[in-house]
Image 1: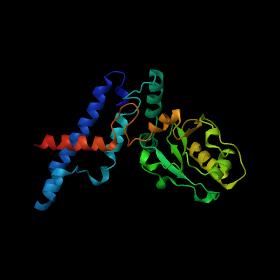
Image 2 (image 1 turned 45 degrees about the vertical axis):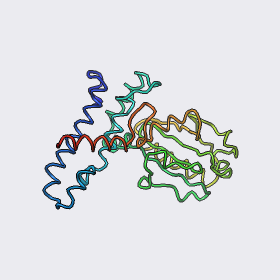
Image 3 (image 1 turned 180 degrees about the horizontal axis):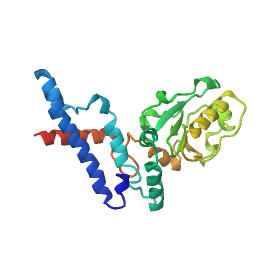
Image 4 (image 1 turned 30 degrees about the vertical axis):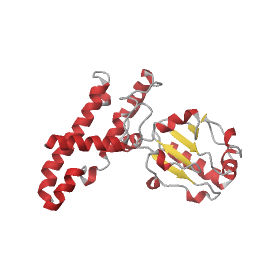
Length: 250
């Protein structure tokens, strides 16, 4: 789809993605499910979206692709930024592409014990519902690295990580964590360095404070929610997939 953005209307590309996925799911329901279920399960199939076991994550990735900045530009997105992102994504391997369209949302520790840093398999769902005001979260994609700071993060944590106890005094936007000799600071900076070492491009850390004007930068990466540029939430997209796939079979 990204290869075709210079030749075809963006709305047409977005609709094509949804149509192809809807037809695939309708075909799966018709040819792969009906013959293998009992009569008592037929009613359940009619009221639920049926997905192949190994493709259950496909709708969230397709929806993320549909509402990406390249296919659904936001008001603050320039054509140059979109073309640059298009080129960067087209050069990615499969693993990087998956992380780009469904970022890692990692909960960070608040204590001085830096040994309990999160692993990729401990990532949370990319939704605002996963964020708590008392928490610190790192959002990782191949192109961006964001640190979200909740308004209720303990003052002792702010001191150990940012060398300040006041939330309003925290830096916002592009920044670099101060080098502090405590377990929390060392552990989180080490995690950031590890993530950066595997990235295909140079990334700078963005600190996003809860309620700050630059929080939209984080919202664009919460792909299960409705996006700032008007893209549908994951739940709404699933609903439309279900309704349209059932309609095709009538």
